Length: 308
Length: 143
Ligand code: SF4
Ligand code: FES
Figure 1 (cartoon, rainbow over the protein chains, first blue to last red):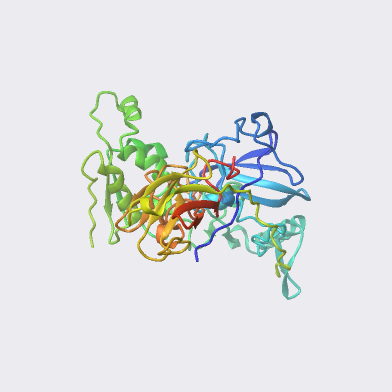
Figure 2: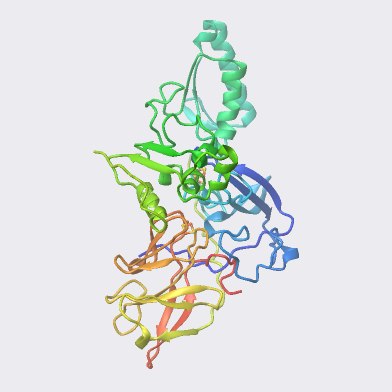
């Protein structure tokens, strides 16, 4: 039987919650999210003056509204030792995703550690260190102190090149920001270590040439380029699933002509047709299907070349 | 590390639903969507007769189902595709299986499609009496 939450309402974000903007924790697209927290004992109300969105929530909201969140975007978590409601929803004001969530990012709240609602109880809440023959929890001060002492000892004994770092990395996103950014600043900029690898990688470069989820040579273009390009050649990638909002919010507008004004502003009188996307892939992915579907009503489907 | 004992989640937040007549069995043709609205006029949906018993199906053939028609991703209005009995979203390509209780076949919604709890009376009138997921665009299914 299909899973249903059997839920008919969610707590309303009050008028003045704690609010932050934050990049998504999941993939490297780095979509913007808004995170609201407020004390677990109360909630906002439908009156425009009594909720964070300033609209009448006693009415049906329109498509793409900012004033709605799915049950997956809600949870009850501990913050500064108190139970709080949390809502993490896509940020309409962020140029990366313009309010779009994906099946990963739109679950951040639900995928948070919550004793109250029994979600993600397996997640770590303290740093763990290997001591006295077992992994055990400790404080951040203690864990960082240990890293500093080991680092200093290795350098004292073997010199700077004796230091090998295996660093956490993921995403230009939340994980990337909190983990990669901190460690990156330390190891790349401050210490300039020679020997470092990030998570699954044998070296600090992509282990496979070019054709990765985001396209040939990942991370070397501005997202806007995908809105302006004449043709995007996509080799062995499935961007709708793997880098969802980069595809939906930056490739699609080019394919369906919605970025025409931007092209005109950028290129002046140069002819600028709708973008084309060429897929080279042994698979017939949903990205191919999406391009065909989006192109269908207005013109022949974009050329997709499926090569085995 | 042991996660500690799981505590029971609080009961799901439910609302009181009206019992609304959406149509009559005689109005339905197999594999054609009938536009309806539930629990009020601002919440569009569809009634479907699928021609074989399905999950949540009511009526003499246990094949009548009802679903919200707004995509739970960003609220676009979905189209019914008779060839594979799915509701399809023009927004960002999500698809939901009408024979499987509205299960998302593929897509970026983080919930399956809200399905109506239906009842058919002796006259063949079809009533909706509840919804099993949050509807797009409202933080309370009944306004
Ligand atoms: S595409 Fe999805 S997973 Fe990736 S950053 Fe955006 S919301 Fe997060
Ligand atoms: S609104 Fe339906 S897939 Fe986005």
